[in-house]
Image (cartoon, rainbow, N blue to C red; front, side, top):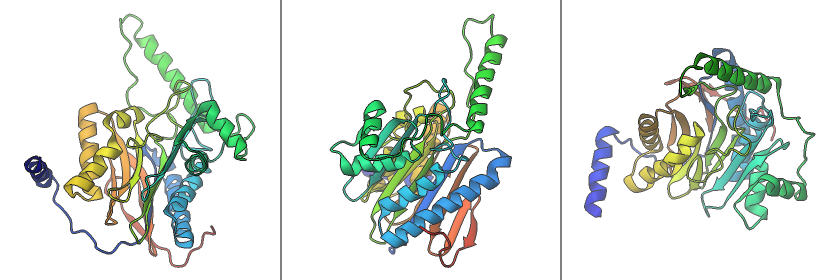
Length: 351
């Protein structure tokens, strides 16, 4: 067993050279706004949204010292923004409804809360935290989750309040694309898949955080995929798939093709490389996503933090919006290789 572990480590190290790990952990809040074929026109809005979410989450971390509170506040900022596929911006099912999934997890005790098939609630991530803290369960879905939300005092919005014009247009475009595909293939026995084209805002939203003591947390929230069957659940609320946090290994939030991320158990694979083979967050994230893309021909993106405070930001999709704040520096980007830095100074966003 020891010999096998050493051999595996040697193989991985040959592909990905190690970096020097910092012995001093600097509190950091890192967010993503979804991976996929983000349009040029939406880039300024995506950048503004993730920058604001990173600042809000970081200031929550500074004020409360609570990594769970920090990731929740960061995700809630994006759930309120119709530029993102979560909360008020969630894409629509085939019938034209918003059904949302979310998960939150903290790494000290491995406590977690997950919800699915949530309707007419602006902040599913807050409901996930309530499941974690106020029930003896870790996952609630559908009618049971909605009943708990009502009992816990969540505001249930009028039906359709979360449906945006952008989401309706995306569903219409998706259905039209199916009609065109079907018309072109009337004489064939099998209809081809549409492919990887994403209709509506791509991906999901998520946040990860670490404090000076090495405590980590992760949160992910999503509306899913345009035109999905009612009842479809993606990777976001699946612990070890799209979300995970463990002080011994790090924290992860994923975005991309949910069915593939679940099947490849992306979060667990990344954290295993960090914990058992000594890779940094960036090395492990890149390795797993590249392997997933080769094996399934599907793309994804991940943000991660390892126990030493090293960040992982990687995506095999065309683009992924991301941002993080560490001290007075705010970093953000959306294209591969992009890292724009702003000096923030004193907090300007009230929490």
